[in-house]
Image (cartoon, rainbow, N blue to C red; front, side, top):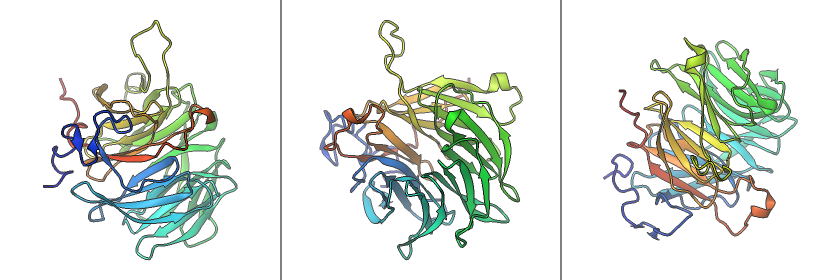
Length: 368
């Protein structure tokens, strides 16, 4: 029986593969633990594209490494390989055919990792740390897009030491997403820029931020025709904005919602408010997951505007998440995000990546 194909096998009862986990606050959802997780905070996770047979997961960390695991149908994970940068890895992505992984680092370079030969070579250079990296596959070109704290967005064809194009941004890149033919970049000082990628990348529109606090994560969503139509933007103030590019009724269609906050309705005590660290859309249902510094993940239906599920609280923040290509697996990383400063850093605490069966829990609410 395939563990990820059916809704059984995940966390049944208090004893799982890892012994009795009933009182275990590091994995309160009793999800599958990935073997040999990174040795420092986990910055990014990405599953292999649908063109590849099987499921492979990559994770980048502040230990300067990026690791690759094979996720087998029975839920076991097999560490396959790893590559190093000379600074923390901040983002990673796959090529559309799954043969390469691209990594972005604080060492101001991006690398291309050929998984077949297990060789990595530098393909990009910035004047500051590279915060975001995405593969663009257009009908007439393929390239890597890098967004940096040097306030530029650069496009590389991976064969030349010079970029195909460099676009100036008003501020440092904090997060980005690409779903061809659209890219969105969120910057410092609450900047928000949408790019169109047809023929060649160009700035399409600057948007006044729907959020009042620092941008942390962004994810593009698609319409029923599978075309990118808007994005979800998360901030450090426990809030997500759903923003359509060309909505029929902007005042009604665009909205924000609160999340990753403590004691919701109890107004007598001050509310603890946490950063939204990552947003990921389900590839089949179009519902979304958010993860936060509060150590919880939540699943949402943006169309019904309802919460589908919130996890129990982990004993550490959740720093990254992603779905595999068919939406059956939800991966999330538990590690310290420094949201409470150095005095809350405990070097004894391990970092974890968990895998959860996501087939059922992310189905949208039945429309009334």
